[in-house]
Image 1 (cartoon, rainbow, N blue to C red):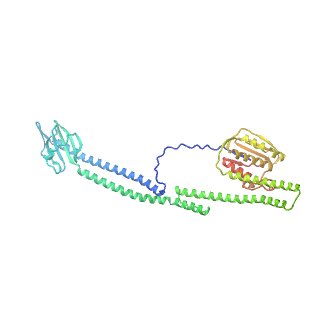
Image 2: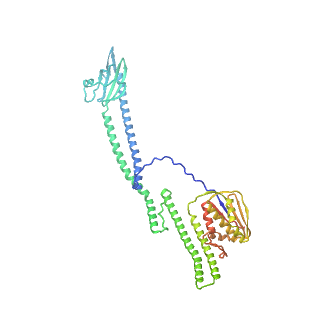
Image 3: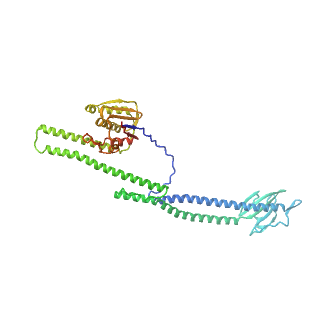
Length: 447
């Protein structure tokens, strides 16, 4: 049989990057947390969109107003008439009701004007002159365009911007109100979606609580159709419950079998004690009876140690680097006396071989395999070969039947015709359990 012990992968914990986390109260439900996260993202997106719409609309309306002023200035500039040092607008120039066209001197004084600012007379306008600044400007609810027209003169075209401000204010109110309504609707929709998405999780939690309360491990979580995350969750939980049920049934069966195996030698020991104490006997008879009971106690100790080792095979794995050839040599030396009593000897073929395993577990595996070879093998030589990451224990004879091999790996199972051979039937079971902890494999080879 070959026991291949493969090096286990080193697990290095990757450094965790800095993470920005939103800390929420622990007593809040997951539905509420998901809804709050969704609404927060949605609200930020909606508000940013509203701000973008507002500024885009304001820019578009302002550009439209500026285009009107530029067209008017072009027409007005072509209508300027000069007579020597004097200048004025042609009589044909007209301005719409809300436009005002002015011809200014270099000092900013009004030389000529067409149109009138709504609600103000020309005298009032001249009493409150606007600053002379070439280009577009917004002054006192007015949008103003000032251009040079030559001869030290300036042309100013202005238009009230209160309509634009009113329109933008209305748009801002609409966007704010619409954003609030959308956020409220998003809250309700987000909670409804979170509730619907988490219903399978509630089913899993209820089923798990019911299983823990009743111990009914045969129950399963209602499956969710499809291939999404919830479908995978329910499928994984059901697979876990199936594995758990199988493990529990296996442990129960093992406990029943172990109790039965312990009862038999204990009953025999009790019967021998009762028989010995039934009447007074000679010292030699007591000595023989005690020797027999000592053998029974030794068998019980061996069985309990095997059961303890099998229970330890479920503990967390702590691997270390071991030299396999040295461990095989130590196991062979420990069983030299047993081999001599069986009129057998060891033939060693060892080469350096490092593996990752548990030291106590590897020693127990090697002792069990070599003991089996000494007990059940025929011939005088037991061969121990180490190389290529494997240990091969060879013995003479045909070995067990191939069909019986899966059964022999179960606890308390013995080979046909071997019931009289000392042993508990836990040796191979323990070997397989320990080997699986190290990513190793027990391989039988028949001649």
